[in-house]
Amino acid sequence: MGANTSQVSDLSDNPSLRTLVGTESISENDPFWNQLISFTFISPTSRYISPIFPNLTLPFVSLSNSGDSKLLEEAVIPLAKILIENNPRSGNFGALVRIFLGRTKELKVSTECQDQLFIWQAHNALFMIRCLLKVFIREMSEEELHLQFSYQERAPGSCAETGSEDLLEELLSNLIHLIVEVPLLDITYSILFEAVTTLLVFFSYQLFNKESSEMD
Image 1 (cartoon, rainbow, N blue to C red):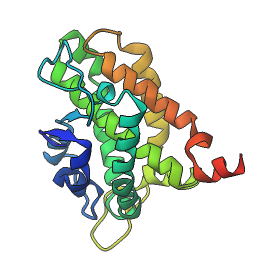
Image 2 (cartoon, rainbow, N blue to C red):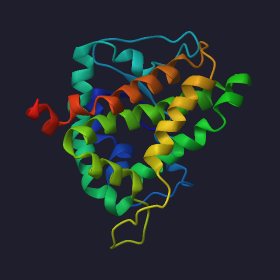
Image 3 (cartoon, one colour):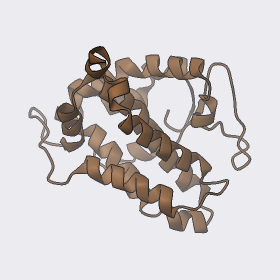
């Protein structure tokens, strides 16, 4: 990922993803974020050619069957576990969420202006958040999950401080607002689909969380 066409087999060695999950904090103003969310994604077994982006493969469609989704999940798990360990120092997960929230503030205007690139990048950011969230939910309690949203960038050698804003609540509110306010068009279908899917991941905590599943 990062201005490239990616496959599941490439994820573990992807330099951009390694930087995201690493120990170094990345400023929200860093050009890295634009590079990170400018990617196309090809699953091992299927391709979907978008009528809007004929040269792009949209990730949510490429991973439409359960086999592809399983391969993706297995590839994301080790990266997400590294991020769980490093995020208290780097705050990079919260930065990724804020990058997405910043994009969505202008999403309705982008739709009216047919700004396809902007919508595509916002979709990619949310796609990454959702993939990471699924692993987070599986590996930690609700309290620990909430903390992952609160860590912010801080000086090297210390843990990232927790922010005053409730980033988790803001993300959930933003997803609902996006679904309600953004019109369903060819160019917005992918991000609306991803918004609904991300909400389903949140609402399926007991399904994905290991401790909850074992209790059931």
